[in-house]
Image (cartoon, rainbow, N blue to C red; front, side, top):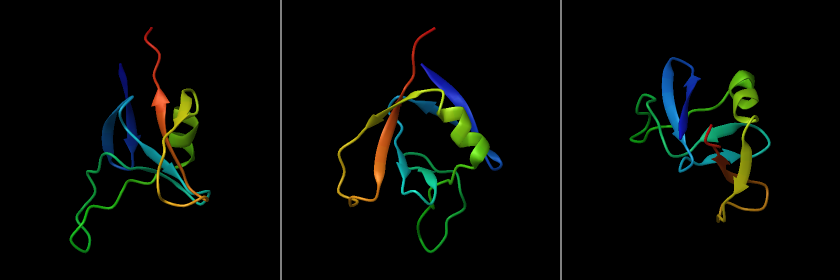
Length: 81
């Protein structure tokens, strides 16, 4: 199962394997990027308020990580209809 999420001008197909990062300042999609290369790497797309509202319909599943205590890495549980 998956759903489409439009971030800026790009559309991403989000599945249960995709990971997001919430550092309380912004939420980013970590596993996909269609952004322009900047300083030899692709920046992670940053979700806006509408995107965050869209993903809030799904249950968050925390993922273990080593980013520090102020960061939450999560996946979405996408229920089959």
